[in-house]
Amino acid sequence: MPRFATIRGHVTYTPGDGVPIPIPEGRVEIDEADDSVILSWEAEPGTVGTTAMPRLQYDQYLEAGKIVPEDAGGQTATA
View 1: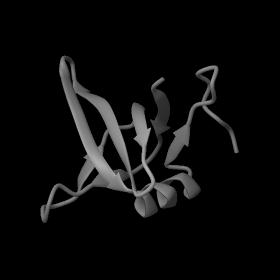
View 2 (view 1 turned 180 degrees about the vertical axis):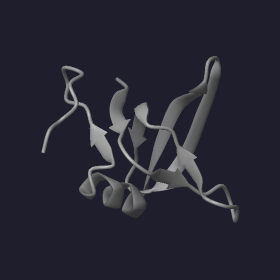
View 3 (view 1 turned 90 degrees about the vertical axis):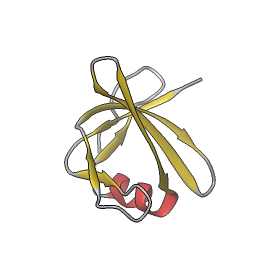
View 4 (view 1 turned 180 degrees about the horizontal axis):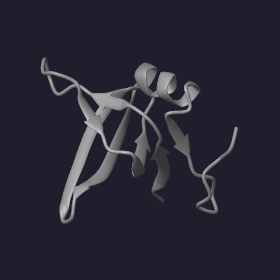
């Protein structure tokens, strides 16, 4: 079952050795593993953006409130 979160604020990913690219604010699908998290979003109508983010970086964004997971009912969790 897919899980979702909301991007709130400046969240970036770095493709390879490239420059950090922002993930747009809004809803993302998340797929968590022990060492990383895959985030997917609609970059523009009909175009999907996706990236794998190291777990440590993802956890830092969670703690900062820049990635906010949804609960089982689809509601954004509040702090």
